[in-house]
Length: 235
Ligand SMILES: Nc1ncnc2c1ncn2[C@@H]1O[C@H](COP(=O)(O)OP(=O)(O)O)[C@@H](O)[C@H]1O
Ligand SMILES: [Mg+2]
Image (cartoon, rainbow, N blue to C red; front, side, top):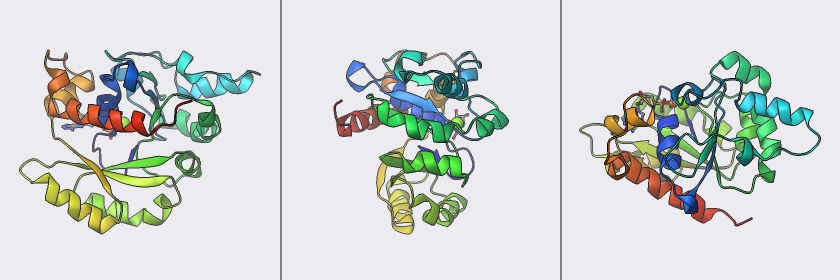
């Protein structure tokens, strides 16, 4: 999953998709944005234990590393995560995207990668070329649609692109979503509800409410998790 500009909530949506999944829909989440990640700090995970160190350790080992075994499970559900290093410098120097691209075919679990902002780097392109589907999160606002259009040629070199349109407060999302789809020429998978209470809980900023699992954002997350795990070919 990627976005083009601003901060539309890629990591929050990834957490909504993975965070409540039961065994049937468990996902391996890998956070790998070139600009550095937030999951390690949000879930108080050890920064010495991120995708960059996993890649480095695996390169030093003769036998392949099972990413599922080394992943953390900070959520209530059955999904696991390998967080990114918080530093952009460390992430870019590690070239984690290229390592993941070569390592992903060995992973038998359905995997969701948080690749952060599209940045045109070759490391990110190699990663996005290796995936089945690229989910692009956009707000239906002019600057984001323009940025996505400008990246069309680059994104058409990656896996199949599908769009997730964030609902804007006071704006009927369905109309905006179809307008965005028409402009970009990629299909819309879902509209993402504006749900700041759930988003805060998913960012570890407030304790989860009892009814979090029934909130609009988590319902959307569950539907997307079912879609991701249903399309996966069993190992
Ligand atoms: N669906 C949403 N509704 C409301 N607020 C959101 C939503 N998704 C994310 N946010 C808020 O936006 C901010 C950025 O989210 P984050 O997921 O970290 O973005 P990104 O990973 O794209 O940089 C956070 O403060 C988060 O709580
Ligand atoms: Mg993020």
